[in-house]
Image 1 (cartoon, rainbow, N blue to C red):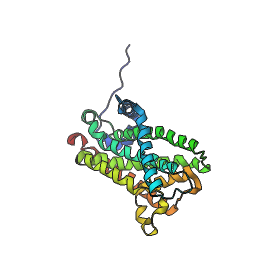
Image 2: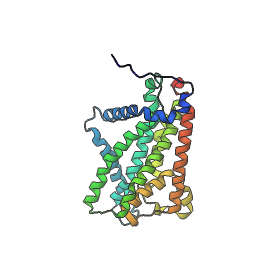
Image 3: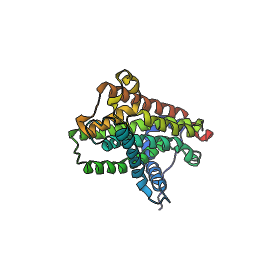
Image 4: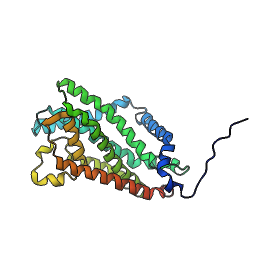
Length: 276
């Protein structure tokens, strides 16, 4: 006697009632999309996944020369390359996630128009792919620490917390851009500008200590300020500036970005198949 395949029951309103349960039910699709994107990202490239190391490393070299050697900005008592790269890690993760998320729904248009699954899986898998690059780039930071004989303090134990915050910031902004890019294809041109502009207004090539006091409040409205300063505080120790109120403002904006991003994405989700 042959075993009957499980029945698929399509219910009216299911996407509203069981959406979050469906995220778990379709977890295999999440793994498939993430693994597929990881495999094809550097396919047919000469050095492959090493691009995840070379790009932030070269940016770190440029910032070290410009800000550390020429402008002679303070390094908070740590080697300038480590100061820059400890910020380059979360920033590169955030920037890559924005780029991948913004185009994720368009890239998977055929899938969206054919079968039902929670569309939230698509941009989330794109963030995971960027997180893999983040982990690979982290090996460069370990190499820099070994080169400069730099030993982190106990604060390195708090690093997973700041990684989580960086992940939430990337998710929040990525969901906004993914949904907006479906409605307005202009965002494919806007995203690179956002990333480029954000690189220079975030404390990647410099320390937050050089920002004038009268600009501190406006400066902390950038959600990546708290993330980057948190990374530096965890990796570099007490030598780096970490102001609680600035971090609190940035952290609040990260959660606001995440909540509104999920809300807007869910609101527009039902129209994705028609618009694409």
